[in-house]
Structures are given as C-alpha cells and as structure tokens.
Amino acid sequence: MDDRDFSQPAYYYDSRFGRDAAKILPGQYFVTNEDKLIVTVLGSCVAACIFDPITEIGGMNHFMLPSNKAVDRDNLQATRYGVHAMEVLINDCLSLGAEKKRLVAKVFGGAKVLPTYIQNNIGASNSEFVLTFLRTENIPIISSDLMNNYARKIYFTPSNGTVLMKRIHDMNNNTITEREVELSVRINEKCKESGSIDLFD
Image (tube, rainbow, N blue to C red; front, side, top):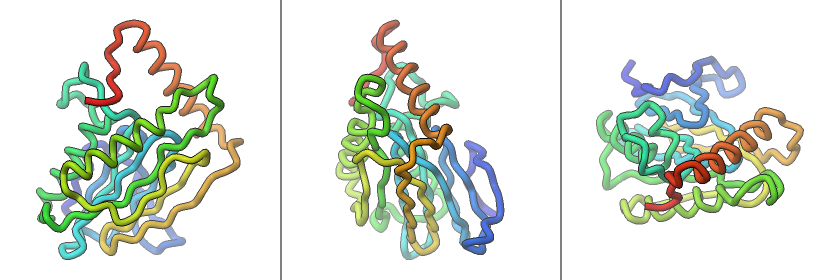
C-alpha cells in the first residue's frame, strides 16, 4: 500500500460503498493510488478533491482558512490553511505518479451556517481562495458546490473521480455547530491579539 496520509485520518470500512475509507477532519488531507473512499463534513471550511483520471491517483483536503502568514509551512497546523493544504495535496498526488497537466478538481464547502452576528463570512473567503488558487495553477474545476447556507458531507473516490454530496440542512448537528463557533472565536481572538490572520496572500 502506498498512501500519503501524514495527517492520520480515521480509517474504516464503509459497507454502504463496499470499500475502505478515510475520514478527514479540518486540517487533514489524504492522497491514494488505490480504490478508496475519502469522507469529510464541511461547514465554512472548503475541501478540494483533486485527481488524475489516467493514473487514478487523487486526494482530498479540508482547510479552515485561506492563509496565515504567521504559520511556518512545516508546522503540523499548516494544513489548516488553504495555501498549504493545496500545495501538499497537489505535491503528494504528483509524488504518487499523477501528472500535473492532467489534474482536475472538484470543490465543495464554504457555507455560511451560523448567523452573521456569530460568524464572519469565512466561507466566502475560503471559496474565493480555492477558485483563485486552482485557476492560477491551471487545474480545471469540473464540478463545484460552494457557499450557500447548508453544510455538506462529501464522499470522494479518487480512482474514478466520483463525488457524492449530501446537503445537511438540519443544524441540530452539534459537531458542525460547535466547530463553526470555535473557529469564529479563534479567528476573532487572533485578529484582536496580533492581526496575524490574513485571508488572502
């Protein structure tokens, strides 16, 4: 087996899809050259699903903010930020044998799932970032579902490029709500303390 899973997602067998799966959380990513499923749940965060349809190599990330210039790219927290999460995702695909010129992307997330007075529009910033990044890297986006006001559960199979997306309108899901509130509080505190959060490079 040759998987690049340095962020250590949770592994399990998904009986519904009949294949091994990796569940990634914010700040994690997973790349594989095998017939595996990658799963994540998104609120204001964004996930990029990138794959080479010829070699059937691909992966998915899950980032929380576009960038933070104060974070060293070798820091374990770096992949929470899109600018680092996109780089490691693409580089790991290439290291497994994908060709840069053949890479295509599907992107999801960036929702505004909490009231405005609680949450700044982090999702819009994440969405704009991923679109700009992929355009700059000349990686075509062949499918997307960004922003809006619902969370999403994403099932991605890199071996064939298939993505199944479940919209989550019921915000009684405590995990998503708590994660979004925590993210908003953290961003507000960092901005007040040091001004180190930069939404765009």
